[in-house]
Length: 135
Length: 107
Image 1 (cartoon, rainbow over the protein chains, first blue to last red):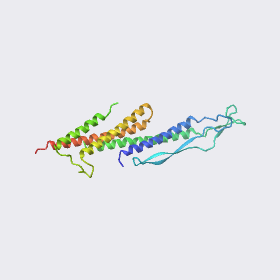
Image 2 (cartoon, rainbow over the protein chains, first blue to last red):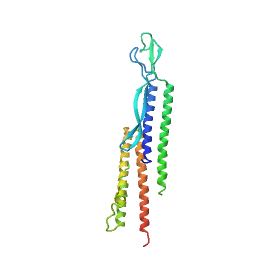
Image 3 (cartoon, rainbow over the protein chains, first blue to last red):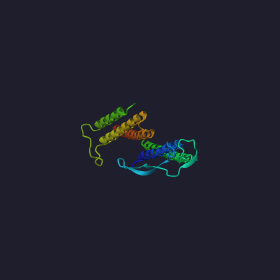
Image 4 (tube, rainbow over the protein chains, first blue to last red):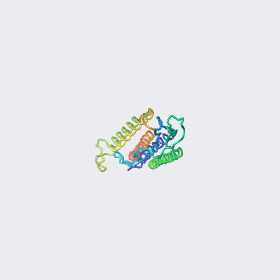
């Protein structure tokens, strides 16, 4: 276990947080994507979970995406008879995406990403300062 | 893109030349340090490793430019290469300083 390994570990953390940001923006972008046919299901919010993973080649414990999933909470029903996806009663199912939740999720992912960035710059600084002892 | 190959080759040459100068006609001691081999081979192995890491970093940087690798991957590879190169140069400087101290020693 070397100090420099912290760079690889933090980098894996940045990777998964990047996935989180990507999914949150995907959800946000699809916040009003309705079904293609009348009465069909609209866009379902996507979620992701992480787990610890072992990098056998380098003997490191990193983080990786455990699974992608969808949010099974109920869709919002909105009355809009003119909408192409409206059912017989005139209601349209809207995606179960709540922009506020997505924005908070994105903010949290951003903070985690920044924490990992700081871990990398801290590691670099420590290695440099240690090497400076030789000068 | 600049390569660190010439630098590494010069390093290896320098180390070899100094080792040859230091032990005229004598074979370099092997197996002296816990079975690692001569100090010369240890150092050249470290330099080769550094070169390999730098090659990997260069490849990743190239893939980053073409868009095949993410910014994060490029930064990780380049950071790893940078730290390795810093370690190698720091150790080399130290070794050469020690060698020069020995050369200047009055007999």
